[in-house]
Length: 139
Image (cartoon, rainbow, N blue to C red; front, top):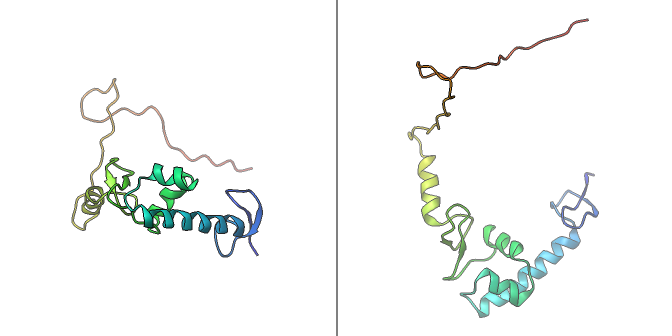
């Protein structure tokens, strides 16, 4: 029976079913119901407006959006990458597409070049003044 401390309330709980304790999970469900009911009546509300009306933290509302439990109306919420409006998940459609195209098969991996040292003298290689050696003491 794996026991762990709840990351929110720090109480000890059995970590078999979830990553948070039953009391915090129940509190999340109550918060979700409040947000869901408010959004049903006010579909184009912002995250700040939902938080003000329901008393639920903005962080928790954003988690509901990111996990897909809530779907944003026209107002949306900010993309984690560019800050533009998104309506589902963590990234907007433009960022999602650019990330997908970066992982497409056949796409060469982009490698960022490391900056050259100031004392680099031609040849295109930076000098290294350290060595990697494994030292084993046998006694």
